[in-house]
Image 1: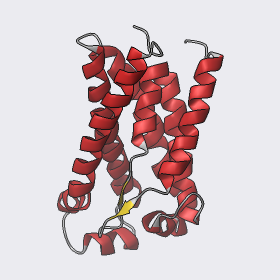
Image 2 (image 1 turned 60 degrees about the vertical axis):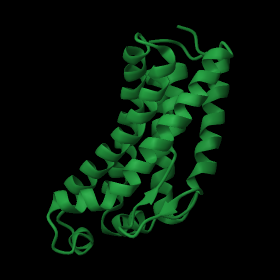
Image 3 (image 1 turned 90 degrees about the vertical axis):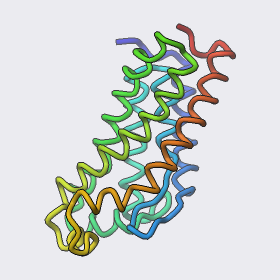
Image 4 (image 1 turned 180 degrees about the vertical axis):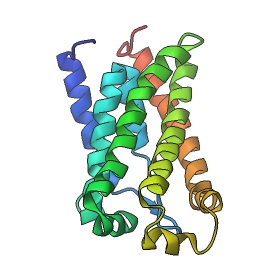
Length: 197
């Protein structure tokens, strides 16, 4: 396991600050979810530092997401409803998918950069949004699918229909923006010599 250098600590601190700012930049959607761009700093950490960096920033994203259940760093209506049902499960649902996402992104970048480091950045950005959506929705359904809140949200639709309807626009916008933004930032970091192969 690679030790964290002073430069990497500084980068992690900056990325946490970016996460906090992005926590207030959500686009609410009718299904109770929001379009968010917090997976971009997670992808940048995974590219620049590796799985450990991705996991650290992914975990920070998860903590911020959980705090939003209580109106800290923004507000999540769905998060507040889930925390009212079971705060511990709300923490698990908001924290661990983001931690896992960040960790896996470090390996995704390591594999994809072998073809081309610039393309690897874009692939990592796409996967950041895709895996965030996949893990978040899977844990939501697994942990809260039988609750009254989720049953009301599904409004008689099947689980798969609800997921597709709930994340259709969110997922597409997040994947597109994350792919472009992570690809651009990653390319800039490579050109600046911050990321070395």
